[in-house]
Image 1 (cartoon, one colour):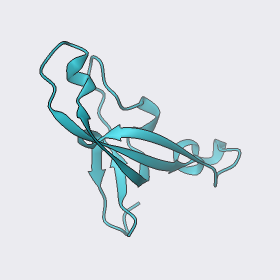
Image 2 (cartoon, helix red, strand yellow):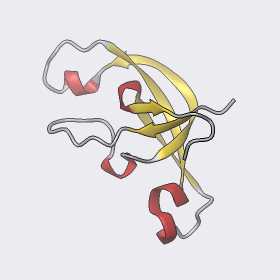
Image 3 (spheres, helix red, strand yellow):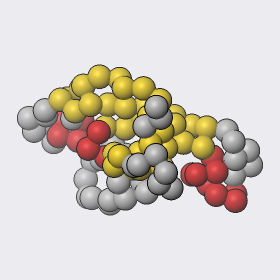
Length: 92
């Protein structure tokens, strides 16, 4: 079963680990990578609880729309769980 996710479309100030070009975009979880200390907290020397890290795959069509030269190509990004919204299988 494919796990579809959307990157939260938030623009908080400070050090964050979700690229702006991915925010609001939909992809599929390619794999779970394990739990790691939250780098958004570590950047400020704060206690950093472990957060699950995922590799998420996006199509160029999803990221760039009609401007994508090869819409079927993909890019993978490693994104922490607190940036992900789970989607039902039929959502777009």
